[in-house]
Length: 593
Image 1 (cartoon, helix red, strand yellow):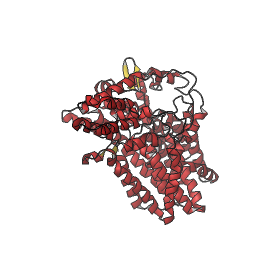
Image 2 (cartoon, one colour):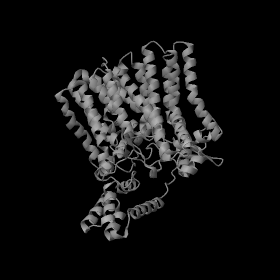
Image 3 (tube, one colour):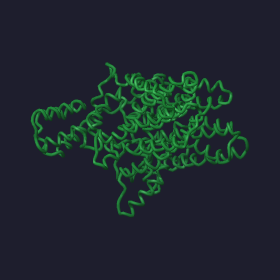
Image 4 (tube, helix red, strand yellow):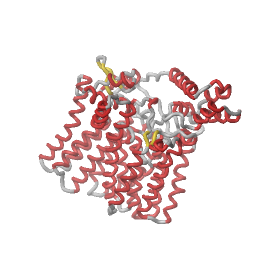
Protein backbone atom coordinates (compact mmCIF):
# COMPACT_ATOMS: atom_id res chain seq x y z
CA UNK A 1 0.00 0.00 0.00
CA UNK A 2 1.55 3.28 -1.14
CA UNK A 3 0.24 6.58 0.16
CA UNK A 4 -0.84 9.27 -2.28
CA UNK A 5 0.88 12.62 -2.11
CA UNK A 6 -1.36 15.30 -0.61
CA UNK A 7 -0.58 18.66 -2.24
CA UNK A 8 -1.12 21.83 -0.25
CA UNK A 9 -3.65 23.02 -2.83
CA UNK A 10 -5.87 20.02 -2.06
CA UNK A 11 -5.77 20.80 1.66
CA UNK A 12 -6.59 24.45 0.99
CA UNK A 13 -9.55 23.55 -1.22
CA UNK A 14 -10.77 21.03 1.34
CA UNK A 15 -10.70 23.85 3.88
CA UNK A 16 -12.74 26.09 1.57
CA UNK A 17 -15.30 23.32 1.05
CA UNK A 18 -15.66 22.90 4.81
CA UNK A 19 -15.97 26.64 5.44
CA UNK A 20 -18.88 26.92 3.02
CA UNK A 21 -20.48 23.58 3.93
CA UNK A 22 -20.46 24.34 7.65
CA UNK A 23 -20.84 28.10 7.51
CA UNK A 24 -23.56 28.81 4.94
CA UNK A 25 -26.55 27.27 6.72
CA UNK A 26 -27.94 27.66 10.22
CA UNK A 27 -30.58 24.92 10.57
CA UNK A 28 -32.22 26.25 13.72
CA UNK A 29 -35.86 25.70 14.62
CA UNK A 30 -36.67 27.43 17.92
CA UNK A 31 -40.24 26.14 18.03
CA UNK A 32 -38.90 22.58 17.94
CA UNK A 33 -37.23 23.32 21.30
CA UNK A 34 -34.51 20.74 20.66
CA UNK A 35 -33.51 19.53 24.15
CA UNK A 36 -30.35 17.80 22.96
CA UNK A 37 -28.96 21.22 22.08
CA UNK A 38 -30.83 23.67 24.30
CA UNK A 39 -29.99 22.05 27.62
CA UNK A 40 -26.29 22.27 26.73
CA UNK A 41 -26.64 25.94 25.81
CA UNK A 42 -28.44 26.58 29.10
CA UNK A 43 -25.58 25.03 31.07
CA UNK A 44 -22.99 27.10 29.20
CA UNK A 45 -24.98 30.27 29.88
CA UNK A 46 -25.35 29.39 33.56
CA UNK A 47 -21.61 28.81 33.94
CA UNK A 48 -20.72 32.10 32.25
CA UNK A 49 -23.40 34.35 33.74
CA UNK A 50 -23.92 32.84 37.18
CA UNK A 51 -20.86 30.69 37.82
CA UNK A 52 -23.00 27.61 38.42
CA UNK A 53 -24.03 24.41 36.69
CA UNK A 54 -27.66 24.96 37.66
CA UNK A 55 -29.79 25.92 34.64
CA UNK A 56 -32.81 27.38 36.46
CA UNK A 57 -31.84 30.92 35.42
CA UNK A 58 -31.62 30.24 31.67
CA UNK A 59 -34.82 28.15 31.84
CA UNK A 60 -36.65 31.05 33.41
CA UNK A 61 -35.37 33.46 30.75
CA UNK A 62 -35.56 31.29 27.63
CA UNK A 63 -38.23 28.77 28.57
CA UNK A 64 -38.50 25.16 29.61
CA UNK A 65 -36.57 22.49 27.75
CA UNK A 66 -36.39 18.74 28.19
CA UNK A 67 -33.36 16.59 29.10
CA UNK A 68 -32.94 18.22 32.51
CA UNK A 69 -32.28 16.54 35.85
CA UNK A 70 -34.02 17.73 39.04
CA UNK A 71 -32.15 17.40 42.34
CA UNK A 72 -33.22 19.13 45.57
CA UNK A 73 -35.38 21.61 43.68
CA UNK A 74 -32.59 22.60 41.30
CA UNK A 75 -32.25 21.79 37.61
CA UNK A 76 -29.18 20.61 35.71
CA UNK A 77 -28.29 19.31 32.28
CA UNK A 78 -28.43 15.53 32.10
CA UNK A 79 -25.84 15.48 29.31
CA UNK A 80 -22.12 14.81 29.57
CA UNK A 81 -20.67 18.27 30.28
CA UNK A 82 -17.93 18.47 27.66
CA UNK A 83 -19.90 20.33 25.00
CA UNK A 84 -21.13 22.93 27.49
CA UNK A 85 -17.57 23.49 28.74
CA UNK A 86 -16.29 23.89 25.18
CA UNK A 87 -18.94 26.53 24.52
CA UNK A 88 -17.75 28.65 27.46
CA UNK A 89 -15.19 30.90 25.68
CA UNK A 90 -17.45 31.82 22.76
CA UNK A 91 -20.43 32.49 25.00
CA UNK A 92 -18.28 34.53 27.39
CA UNK A 93 -17.29 36.93 24.60
CA UNK A 94 -20.88 37.16 23.39
CA UNK A 95 -22.16 37.84 26.90
CA UNK A 96 -19.55 40.55 27.52
CA UNK A 97 -20.35 42.20 24.21
CA UNK A 98 -24.08 42.19 24.84
CA UNK A 99 -23.60 43.31 28.46
CA UNK A 100 -21.54 46.29 27.31
CA UNK A 101 -24.36 47.20 24.92
CA UNK A 102 -26.94 46.91 27.70
CA UNK A 103 -28.64 43.90 26.14
CA UNK A 104 -29.31 40.35 27.18
CA UNK A 105 -28.17 37.47 25.01
CA UNK A 106 -31.02 35.90 23.07
CA UNK A 107 -31.31 32.14 22.78
CA UNK A 108 -30.79 32.30 19.01
CA UNK A 109 -27.56 34.27 19.46
CA UNK A 110 -26.40 31.85 22.14
CA UNK A 111 -27.05 28.81 19.95
CA UNK A 112 -25.28 30.36 16.96
CA UNK A 113 -22.16 31.35 18.88
CA UNK A 114 -21.94 28.01 20.68
CA UNK A 115 -22.36 26.14 17.41
CA UNK A 116 -19.68 28.11 15.59
CA UNK A 117 -17.04 28.24 18.31
CA UNK A 118 -17.56 24.90 20.04
CA UNK A 119 -18.83 22.62 17.28
CA UNK A 120 -18.22 23.88 13.76
CA UNK A 121 -14.64 25.13 14.18
CA UNK A 122 -13.44 22.00 16.04
CA UNK A 123 -15.21 19.78 13.50
CA UNK A 124 -13.57 21.52 10.54
CA UNK A 125 -10.18 21.23 12.23
CA UNK A 126 -10.71 17.51 12.81
CA UNK A 127 -11.84 16.94 9.22
CA UNK A 128 -8.67 18.54 7.85
CA UNK A 129 -6.43 16.55 10.21
CA UNK A 130 -8.27 13.36 9.35
CA UNK A 131 -7.91 14.19 5.64
CA UNK A 132 -4.14 14.40 6.07
CA UNK A 133 -4.03 11.16 8.04
CA UNK A 134 -6.27 9.19 5.69
CA UNK A 135 -4.16 10.25 2.70
CA UNK A 136 -1.40 8.02 4.11
CA UNK A 137 -3.69 4.98 4.01
CA UNK A 138 -4.27 4.81 0.23
CA UNK A 139 -2.41 5.30 -3.02
CA UNK A 140 -5.50 6.57 -4.84
CA UNK A 141 -6.18 10.33 -4.73
CA UNK A 142 -9.81 9.75 -5.74
CA UNK A 143 -10.38 7.22 -2.96
CA UNK A 144 -8.76 9.67 -0.54
CA UNK A 145 -10.89 12.64 -1.59
CA UNK A 146 -14.11 10.62 -1.88
CA UNK A 147 -13.56 9.35 1.66
CA UNK A 148 -13.05 12.91 2.86
CA UNK A 149 -16.28 14.10 1.23
CA UNK A 150 -18.13 11.10 2.64
CA UNK A 151 -17.23 11.92 6.23
CA UNK A 152 -17.13 15.72 6.07
CA UNK A 153 -20.28 16.32 4.01
CA UNK A 154 -21.96 12.92 3.75
CA UNK A 155 -22.20 11.38 7.19
CA UNK A 156 -24.01 12.02 10.45
CA UNK A 157 -20.82 13.75 11.64
CA UNK A 158 -21.82 16.56 9.28
CA UNK A 159 -25.25 16.89 10.87
CA UNK A 160 -23.93 16.88 14.42
CA UNK A 161 -20.97 19.07 13.56
CA UNK A 162 -23.50 21.76 12.61
CA UNK A 163 -25.29 21.52 15.98
CA UNK A 164 -24.19 22.24 19.55
CA UNK A 165 -24.26 18.57 20.52
CA UNK A 166 -21.68 15.97 21.45
CA UNK A 167 -21.66 13.19 18.86
CA UNK A 168 -19.15 14.60 16.38
CA UNK A 169 -16.91 15.98 19.14
CA UNK A 170 -16.77 12.60 20.88
CA UNK A 171 -15.98 10.84 17.59
CA UNK A 172 -13.24 13.38 16.82
CA UNK A 173 -11.64 12.87 20.24
CA UNK A 174 -11.73 9.09 19.93
CA UNK A 175 -10.28 9.08 16.43
CA UNK A 176 -7.77 11.79 17.34
CA UNK A 177 -6.47 9.66 20.19
CA UNK A 178 -6.31 6.65 17.88
CA UNK A 179 -4.43 8.55 15.16
CA UNK A 180 -1.85 9.88 17.63
CA UNK A 181 -1.29 6.40 19.05
CA UNK A 182 -0.99 4.83 15.62
CA UNK A 183 1.58 7.44 14.58
CA UNK A 184 3.47 6.96 17.85
CA UNK A 185 3.61 3.20 17.32
CA UNK A 186 4.97 3.64 13.80
CA UNK A 187 7.56 6.18 15.05
CA UNK A 188 8.81 4.04 17.94
CA UNK A 189 6.85 5.63 20.77
CA UNK A 190 5.13 8.78 21.96
CA UNK A 191 6.74 12.16 22.31
CA UNK A 192 6.06 13.79 25.67
CA UNK A 193 3.53 16.19 24.15
CA UNK A 194 1.98 13.37 22.17
CA UNK A 195 1.41 11.25 25.28
CA UNK A 196 -0.19 14.17 27.15
CA UNK A 197 -2.45 15.15 24.26
CA UNK A 198 -3.48 11.55 23.60
CA UNK A 199 -4.55 11.19 27.23
CA UNK A 200 -6.56 14.39 26.94
CA UNK A 201 -8.36 13.22 23.79
CA UNK A 202 -9.02 9.67 24.98
CA UNK A 203 -10.62 10.86 28.22
CA UNK A 204 -12.50 13.62 26.39
CA UNK A 205 -14.31 10.96 24.38
CA UNK A 206 -16.39 10.30 27.51
CA UNK A 207 -16.24 13.96 28.61
CA UNK A 208 -18.40 14.74 25.57
CA UNK A 209 -20.58 11.63 25.50
CA UNK A 210 -21.12 9.11 28.29
CA UNK A 211 -21.39 6.03 26.00
CA UNK A 212 -17.86 6.86 24.86
CA UNK A 213 -16.50 5.27 28.04
CA UNK A 214 -16.10 1.96 26.18
CA UNK A 215 -13.90 3.65 23.59
CA UNK A 216 -11.99 5.55 26.30
CA UNK A 217 -11.08 2.32 28.10
CA UNK A 218 -10.06 0.50 24.93
CA UNK A 219 -8.07 3.44 23.57
CA UNK A 220 -6.25 3.76 26.89
CA UNK A 221 -5.13 0.12 26.60
CA UNK A 222 -4.16 0.79 22.97
CA UNK A 223 -2.11 3.83 23.97
CA UNK A 224 -0.19 1.74 26.51
CA UNK A 225 1.24 -0.26 23.60
CA UNK A 226 3.07 2.92 22.53
CA UNK A 227 4.43 3.81 26.00
CA UNK A 228 8.21 3.52 26.09
CA UNK A 229 9.19 5.39 29.27
CA UNK A 230 7.60 6.07 32.68
CA UNK A 231 7.13 9.68 31.56
CA UNK A 232 4.65 8.50 28.94
CA UNK A 233 2.47 6.91 31.64
CA UNK A 234 2.57 10.04 33.77
CA UNK A 235 1.91 12.50 30.96
CA UNK A 236 -0.90 10.42 29.50
CA UNK A 237 -2.48 10.28 32.96
CA UNK A 238 -2.10 14.02 33.50
CA UNK A 239 -3.78 14.72 30.17
CA UNK A 240 -6.60 12.31 30.95
CA UNK A 241 -7.16 13.83 34.40
CA UNK A 242 -8.26 17.20 33.00
CA UNK A 243 -11.58 16.10 31.44
CA UNK A 244 -12.03 13.35 34.05
CA UNK A 245 -11.86 15.75 36.98
CA UNK A 246 -14.14 18.20 35.16
CA UNK A 247 -16.81 15.50 34.78
CA UNK A 248 -16.44 14.44 38.40
CA UNK A 249 -16.71 18.03 39.62
CA UNK A 250 -19.90 18.51 37.64
CA UNK A 251 -21.40 15.29 39.02
CA UNK A 252 -20.44 16.11 42.59
CA UNK A 253 -21.70 19.70 42.40
CA UNK A 254 -25.00 18.76 40.77
CA UNK A 255 -25.82 15.30 42.10
CA UNK A 256 -23.70 14.90 45.23
CA UNK A 257 -21.52 12.06 43.93
CA UNK A 258 -18.57 12.40 41.51
CA UNK A 259 -19.46 9.06 39.89
CA UNK A 260 -23.23 9.63 39.50
CA UNK A 261 -24.61 11.20 36.29
CA UNK A 262 -28.01 12.83 36.30
CA UNK A 263 -30.06 10.25 34.43
CA UNK A 264 -31.75 8.80 37.52
CA UNK A 265 -32.82 12.34 38.48
CA UNK A 266 -34.40 13.21 35.14
CA UNK A 267 -37.27 15.65 35.38
CA UNK A 268 -39.22 13.89 32.65
CA UNK A 269 -40.86 10.87 34.37
CA UNK A 270 -40.89 8.72 31.23
CA UNK A 271 -37.20 9.32 30.56
CA UNK A 272 -36.40 8.73 34.23
CA UNK A 273 -38.30 5.45 34.16
CA UNK A 274 -36.38 4.34 31.06
CA UNK A 275 -33.00 5.11 32.65
CA UNK A 276 -33.93 3.34 35.88
CA UNK A 277 -34.24 0.10 33.92
CA UNK A 278 -31.10 -2.03 33.92
CA UNK A 279 -27.83 -0.08 34.00
CA UNK A 280 -28.87 3.46 33.06
CA UNK A 281 -31.16 2.11 30.35
CA UNK A 282 -29.00 -0.83 29.27
CA UNK A 283 -31.50 -3.63 29.69
CA UNK A 284 -31.02 -6.46 27.21
CA UNK A 285 -29.34 -7.10 23.91
CA UNK A 286 -31.50 -6.16 20.91
CA UNK A 287 -30.17 -7.84 17.74
CA UNK A 288 -32.83 -6.06 15.70
CA UNK A 289 -31.23 -2.78 16.77
CA UNK A 290 -27.97 -3.70 15.05
CA UNK A 291 -29.77 -4.56 11.82
CA UNK A 292 -31.76 -1.33 11.87
CA UNK A 293 -28.81 0.88 12.82
CA UNK A 294 -26.72 -0.47 9.96
CA UNK A 295 -29.04 -1.26 7.03
CA UNK A 296 -32.32 0.64 7.47
CA UNK A 297 -32.77 2.73 4.31
CA UNK A 298 -34.15 5.65 6.26
CA UNK A 299 -31.57 5.87 9.01
CA UNK A 300 -28.99 3.10 8.61
CA UNK A 301 -25.30 3.83 8.71
CA UNK A 302 -24.42 1.98 5.51
CA UNK A 303 -27.20 3.24 3.20
CA UNK A 304 -26.58 6.82 4.31
CA UNK A 305 -22.76 6.66 4.02
CA UNK A 306 -22.24 3.69 1.67
CA UNK A 307 -18.47 3.94 1.42
CA UNK A 308 -18.30 2.46 4.93
CA UNK A 309 -19.36 -0.96 3.64
CA UNK A 310 -15.87 -1.46 2.20
CA UNK A 311 -14.55 -1.78 5.74
CA UNK A 312 -15.43 -5.48 5.36
CA UNK A 313 -12.55 -5.66 2.86
CA UNK A 314 -10.19 -3.33 4.66
CA UNK A 315 -10.09 -4.76 8.16
CA UNK A 316 -9.13 -8.30 7.06
CA UNK A 317 -6.28 -6.78 5.10
CA UNK A 318 -5.18 -4.73 8.11
CA UNK A 319 -5.36 -7.79 10.37
CA UNK A 320 -3.23 -9.83 7.99
CA UNK A 321 -0.57 -7.11 7.88
CA UNK A 322 1.77 -7.60 10.81
CA UNK A 323 2.53 -3.88 11.10
CA UNK A 324 -1.10 -2.80 11.32
CA UNK A 325 -2.57 -5.82 13.14
CA UNK A 326 -2.65 -4.29 16.63
CA UNK A 327 -4.06 -1.02 15.28
CA UNK A 328 -6.82 -2.88 13.44
CA UNK A 329 -7.69 -4.99 16.49
CA UNK A 330 -8.26 -1.93 18.64
CA UNK A 331 -10.16 -0.07 15.92
CA UNK A 332 -12.46 -3.08 15.61
CA UNK A 333 -12.81 -3.38 19.38
CA UNK A 334 -13.82 0.27 19.66
CA UNK A 335 -16.36 -0.15 16.87
CA UNK A 336 -17.82 -3.45 18.05
CA UNK A 337 -17.78 -2.41 21.70
CA UNK A 338 -19.72 0.77 20.94
CA UNK A 339 -22.24 -1.05 18.75
CA UNK A 340 -22.87 -3.73 21.37
CA UNK A 341 -23.28 -1.15 24.13
CA UNK A 342 -25.86 0.82 22.15
CA UNK A 343 -27.67 -2.39 21.17
CA UNK A 344 -28.24 -2.99 24.89
CA UNK A 345 -29.85 0.43 25.38
CA UNK A 346 -33.62 0.78 25.48
CA UNK A 347 -33.27 4.07 23.58
CA UNK A 348 -30.89 2.83 20.90
CA UNK A 349 -32.81 4.58 18.12
CA UNK A 350 -32.10 8.00 19.62
CA UNK A 351 -35.30 9.85 18.70
CA UNK A 352 -35.38 12.46 15.92
CA UNK A 353 -31.99 12.07 14.26
CA UNK A 354 -29.87 11.90 11.13
CA UNK A 355 -28.68 8.30 11.14
CA UNK A 356 -28.01 6.21 14.26
CA UNK A 357 -26.51 9.09 16.25
CA UNK A 358 -25.18 6.93 19.07
CA UNK A 359 -22.91 5.20 16.54
CA UNK A 360 -21.32 8.45 15.37
CA UNK A 361 -18.13 7.52 17.19
CA UNK A 362 -17.66 4.49 14.92
CA UNK A 363 -17.76 6.42 11.63
CA UNK A 364 -14.08 7.46 11.35
CA UNK A 365 -12.89 4.01 12.46
CA UNK A 366 -15.05 2.30 9.85
CA UNK A 367 -13.93 4.81 7.23
CA UNK A 368 -10.30 3.91 7.88
CA UNK A 369 -11.12 0.28 7.16
CA UNK A 370 -13.14 1.29 4.11
CA UNK A 371 -10.28 3.33 2.65
CA UNK A 372 -7.89 0.40 3.08
CA UNK A 373 -10.46 -1.90 1.47
CA UNK A 374 -10.93 0.41 -1.49
CA UNK A 375 -7.17 0.78 -1.80
CA UNK A 376 -6.91 -3.00 -2.16
CA UNK A 377 -9.61 -2.93 -4.85
CA UNK A 378 -7.81 -0.06 -6.55
CA UNK A 379 -4.68 -2.15 -6.90
CA UNK A 380 -6.65 -4.69 -8.96
CA UNK A 381 -9.42 -2.62 -10.60
CA UNK A 382 -8.33 1.04 -10.51
CA UNK A 383 -10.94 2.66 -12.74
CA UNK A 384 -13.88 0.69 -11.35
CA UNK A 385 -12.79 1.48 -7.80
CA UNK A 386 -12.56 5.20 -8.55
CA UNK A 387 -16.06 5.14 -10.06
CA UNK A 388 -17.39 3.33 -6.98
CA UNK A 389 -15.69 5.77 -4.60
CA UNK A 390 -17.11 8.82 -6.40
CA UNK A 391 -20.58 7.26 -6.50
CA UNK A 392 -20.46 6.51 -2.77
CA UNK A 393 -19.48 10.09 -2.02
CA UNK A 394 -22.32 11.42 -4.18
CA UNK A 395 -24.88 9.17 -2.49
CA UNK A 396 -23.64 10.13 0.97
CA UNK A 397 -23.85 13.85 0.20
CA UNK A 398 -27.48 13.40 -0.79
CA UNK A 399 -28.68 10.75 1.67
CA UNK A 400 -26.88 12.27 4.69
CA UNK A 401 -25.92 15.73 3.47
CA UNK A 402 -29.39 16.99 2.58
CA UNK A 403 -30.95 16.00 5.94
CA UNK A 404 -27.96 17.50 7.73
CA UNK A 405 -28.42 20.83 5.97
CA UNK A 406 -32.19 21.11 5.91
CA UNK A 407 -33.55 19.47 9.03
CA UNK A 408 -31.21 17.31 11.15
CA UNK A 409 -34.07 16.03 13.33
CA UNK A 410 -35.77 13.33 11.25
CA UNK A 411 -38.53 11.45 13.13
CA UNK A 412 -38.10 7.66 13.12
CA UNK A 413 -41.69 7.34 11.86
CA UNK A 414 -40.55 8.70 8.48
CA UNK A 415 -39.48 5.60 6.54
CA UNK A 416 -37.83 7.33 3.58
CA UNK A 417 -36.76 10.86 4.54
CA UNK A 418 -35.73 11.99 1.06
CA UNK A 419 -39.09 11.55 -0.73
CA UNK A 420 -41.36 11.85 2.30
CA UNK A 421 -39.87 14.92 3.96
CA UNK A 422 -37.10 16.61 2.04
CA UNK A 423 -38.64 16.49 -1.43
CA UNK A 424 -41.76 18.33 -0.15
CA UNK A 425 -39.56 20.81 1.71
CA UNK A 426 -37.59 21.58 -1.44
CA UNK A 427 -40.69 21.59 -3.67
CA UNK A 428 -42.59 24.06 -1.51
CA UNK A 429 -39.69 26.40 -0.72
CA UNK A 430 -38.99 25.48 2.88
CA UNK A 431 -35.33 26.27 3.51
CA UNK A 432 -33.35 26.68 6.73
CA UNK A 433 -31.85 29.99 7.77
CA UNK A 434 -28.80 30.68 5.61
CA UNK A 435 -26.55 33.42 4.31
CA UNK A 436 -28.73 33.87 1.23
CA UNK A 437 -31.13 35.85 3.40
CA UNK A 438 -28.62 38.71 3.49
CA UNK A 439 -29.25 39.08 -0.23
CA UNK A 440 -33.01 38.80 0.34
CA UNK A 441 -33.08 35.25 -1.04
CA UNK A 442 -35.31 32.75 0.73
CA UNK A 443 -36.71 29.33 0.02
CA UNK A 444 -35.16 26.74 -2.26
CA UNK A 445 -33.34 29.37 -4.33
CA UNK A 446 -31.37 30.37 -1.24
CA UNK A 447 -30.01 26.81 -1.05
CA UNK A 448 -28.69 26.86 -4.63
CA UNK A 449 -25.15 27.69 -3.43
CA UNK A 450 -25.14 24.46 -1.42
CA UNK A 451 -26.27 22.43 -4.42
CA UNK A 452 -23.49 24.06 -6.42
CA UNK A 453 -21.02 23.33 -3.63
CA UNK A 454 -21.89 19.63 -3.71
CA UNK A 455 -21.31 19.53 -7.47
CA UNK A 456 -18.02 21.41 -7.13
CA UNK A 457 -16.92 19.03 -4.38
CA UNK A 458 -17.49 15.99 -6.58
CA UNK A 459 -15.70 17.64 -9.51
CA UNK A 460 -12.82 18.45 -7.14
CA UNK A 461 -12.57 14.78 -6.12
CA UNK A 462 -12.72 13.71 -9.77
CA UNK A 463 -9.90 16.10 -10.78
CA UNK A 464 -7.55 14.35 -8.37
CA UNK A 465 -7.10 11.69 -11.08
CA UNK A 466 -9.36 12.76 -13.91
CA UNK A 467 -10.60 10.35 -16.57
CA UNK A 468 -13.64 10.50 -18.86
CA UNK A 469 -14.55 6.99 -17.68
CA UNK A 470 -15.35 8.36 -14.25
CA UNK A 471 -18.60 9.82 -15.63
CA UNK A 472 -20.10 6.39 -15.03
CA UNK A 473 -20.23 7.24 -11.34
CA UNK A 474 -23.38 9.26 -12.11
CA UNK A 475 -25.63 6.32 -13.16
CA UNK A 476 -24.11 4.18 -10.40
CA UNK A 477 -24.95 6.83 -7.81
CA UNK A 478 -28.46 7.03 -9.24
CA UNK A 479 -28.90 3.28 -8.91
CA UNK A 480 -27.67 3.35 -5.31
CA UNK A 481 -30.02 6.23 -4.49
CA UNK A 482 -33.10 4.66 -6.07
CA UNK A 483 -34.05 2.52 -3.02
CA UNK A 484 -33.98 5.67 -0.88
CA UNK A 485 -36.88 7.02 -2.95
CA UNK A 486 -39.09 3.91 -2.85
CA UNK A 487 -41.42 4.01 0.14
CA UNK A 488 -42.62 0.57 1.30
CA UNK A 489 -46.34 -0.05 0.81
CA UNK A 490 -46.74 -1.03 4.45
CA UNK A 491 -44.88 2.03 5.78
CA UNK A 492 -46.90 4.17 8.20
CA UNK A 493 -48.06 7.52 6.93
CA UNK A 494 -45.62 10.30 7.68
CA UNK A 495 -47.94 13.15 6.67
CA UNK A 496 -48.69 14.18 10.25
CA UNK A 497 -44.96 14.61 10.93
CA UNK A 498 -44.41 16.58 7.73
CA UNK A 499 -47.33 18.80 8.77
CA UNK A 500 -45.91 19.33 12.22
CA UNK A 501 -42.43 20.10 10.91
CA UNK A 502 -43.64 22.61 8.31
CA UNK A 503 -45.92 24.32 10.83
CA UNK A 504 -42.91 24.90 13.07
CA UNK A 505 -40.58 25.86 10.23
CA UNK A 506 -38.08 28.65 10.64
CA UNK A 507 -37.74 31.13 9.01
CA UNK A 508 -41.53 31.32 8.62
CA UNK A 509 -43.65 32.95 5.93
CA UNK A 510 -41.24 32.34 3.03
CA UNK A 511 -42.58 29.01 1.74
CA UNK A 512 -44.96 28.74 -1.21
CA UNK A 513 -48.15 28.10 0.82
CA UNK A 514 -47.41 31.04 3.12
CA UNK A 515 -46.65 33.39 0.22
CA UNK A 516 -49.80 32.37 -1.66
CA UNK A 517 -51.87 32.75 1.52
CA UNK A 518 -50.48 36.23 2.07
CA UNK A 519 -51.22 37.14 -1.54
CA UNK A 520 -54.81 35.93 -1.24
CA UNK A 521 -55.29 37.86 1.98
CA UNK A 522 -53.85 41.05 0.55
CA UNK A 523 -55.40 41.01 -2.92
CA UNK A 524 -58.05 38.33 -2.94
CA UNK A 525 -58.24 35.73 -5.63
CA UNK A 526 -60.39 33.36 -7.61
CA UNK A 527 -61.44 29.85 -6.66
CA UNK A 528 -58.51 28.37 -8.58
CA UNK A 529 -55.99 30.11 -6.35
CA UNK A 530 -57.83 29.08 -3.21
CA UNK A 531 -57.90 25.47 -4.43
CA UNK A 532 -54.20 25.66 -5.28
CA UNK A 533 -53.45 26.69 -1.72
CA UNK A 534 -55.59 23.88 -0.32
CA UNK A 535 -53.77 21.35 -2.52
CA UNK A 536 -50.43 22.63 -1.24
CA UNK A 537 -51.59 22.18 2.33
CA UNK A 538 -52.77 18.64 1.57
CA UNK A 539 -49.43 17.75 0.00
CA UNK A 540 -47.80 18.74 3.29
CA UNK A 541 -50.27 16.74 5.37
CA UNK A 542 -51.91 19.90 6.68
CA UNK A 543 -55.47 18.75 6.15
CA UNK A 544 -57.02 21.10 8.69
CA UNK A 545 -55.64 24.15 6.89
CA UNK A 546 -56.76 22.69 3.56
CA UNK A 547 -60.29 22.15 4.86
CA UNK A 548 -60.56 25.64 6.30
CA UNK A 549 -59.14 27.15 3.13
CA UNK A 550 -61.84 25.52 1.03
CA UNK A 551 -64.61 26.36 3.51
CA UNK A 552 -63.94 30.06 3.56
CA UNK A 553 -60.63 31.75 3.14
CA UNK A 554 -62.15 35.18 3.64
CA UNK A 555 -62.20 34.68 7.42
CA UNK A 556 -58.46 35.30 7.50
CA UNK A 557 -58.11 39.05 7.17
CA UNK A 558 -54.32 39.23 7.68
CA UNK A 559 -51.34 36.88 7.55
CA UNK A 560 -51.27 37.11 11.35
CA UNK A 561 -54.72 35.54 11.48
CA UNK A 562 -53.54 32.54 9.52
CA UNK A 563 -50.37 32.27 11.59
CA UNK A 564 -52.44 32.28 14.78
CA UNK A 565 -54.72 29.64 13.28
CA UNK A 566 -51.74 27.42 12.52
CA UNK A 567 -50.39 27.96 16.03
CA UNK A 568 -53.76 27.00 17.52
CA UNK A 569 -53.81 23.80 15.48
CA UNK A 570 -50.28 22.95 16.53
CA UNK A 571 -51.03 23.50 20.21
CA UNK A 572 -54.13 21.33 19.86
CA UNK A 573 -52.04 18.56 18.33
CA UNK A 574 -49.48 18.87 21.12
CA UNK A 575 -52.18 18.52 23.76
CA UNK A 576 -53.71 15.56 21.94
CA UNK A 577 -50.38 13.73 21.74
CA UNK A 578 -50.64 10.72 24.13
CA UNK A 579 -47.82 10.32 26.65
CA UNK A 580 -45.41 7.47 25.98
CA UNK A 581 -46.37 4.25 27.68
CA UNK A 582 -44.15 2.94 30.40
CA UNK A 583 -42.48 -0.28 29.40
CA UNK A 584 -40.40 -2.31 31.77
CA UNK A 585 -38.16 -5.08 30.58
CA UNK A 586 -39.06 -4.92 26.91
CA UNK A 587 -38.66 -2.66 23.93
CA UNK A 588 -40.82 -2.47 20.86
CA UNK A 589 -38.86 -3.84 17.95
CA UNK A 590 -38.18 -1.59 15.00
CA UNK A 591 -37.74 -3.50 11.79
CA UNK A 592 -35.43 -2.16 9.10
CA UNK A 593 -37.37 -0.66 6.26
